[in-house]
Image (cartoon, rainbow, N blue to C red; front, side):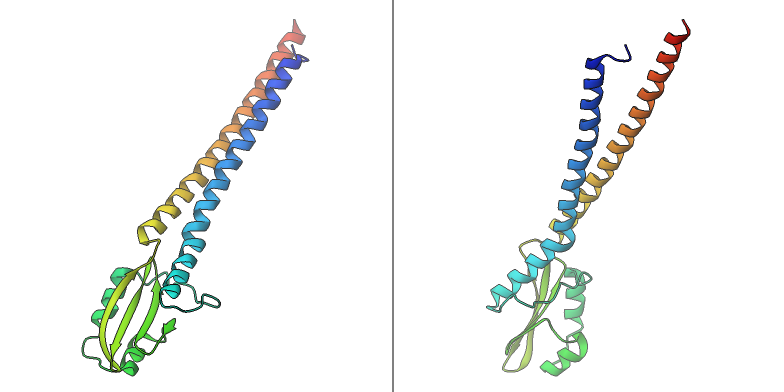
Length: 177
């Protein structure tokens, strides 16, 4: 029984499947995490720059702390300001600056400050192609898949250890008789 080629073949097949499947799940998890943390924010900033007709080379990264709610809070703090210098004092240097707009890229979009005749006019949140929900969902799916991959690997290791111990006990019991 110990030298049964069919049993050895099935064991090798189970070992291969037990290692390949968790690897594939982990790879998909890494892909989702890459999209949620790196690729989607980068694509968002590039799209927001393209909308303004600006080159995407050398563009800054998005400010992960600038959410739509935070942007609206910053916009509310602009009441009473009038000049571009006042806006710069309150919000700092924008990532994108034109004669009549400042742009601050954030999490799932960006804060656009419009000026009219050199004076503050409006502040609005501009959604990007991948909004904040898309980013969060990508991140959570990636984390969940990573956890599933770890669970599958642990299951495979425990099952292999149990099978090895069971096979050793069966072999030693057969040898005793």
